[in-house]
Length: 98
Image 1 (tube, rainbow, N blue to C red):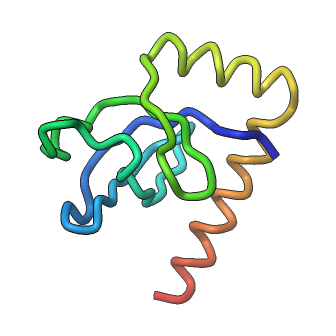
Image 2: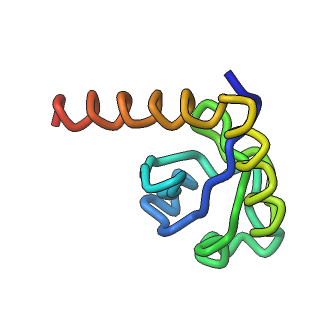
């Protein structure tokens, strides 16, 4: 399993809990954004930003070029597909409980 996979923040799902929806290669998942909150506290400014995601947390912000390079390396190492499939399984399991 990789240390972090790049994802783009596409919306804020709960600003009080600092949660947002990220997109990783077409798979969307809710993650905690507390580690990358802007200094001014305006969580909405994170929409459109890229971050490295690990176990449900956005660990650091990265730019789009770095996200693309990181994903390319993860694909070459065979790590990206494994992580994306794990996210899909998790998303499916959450959908089945709802």
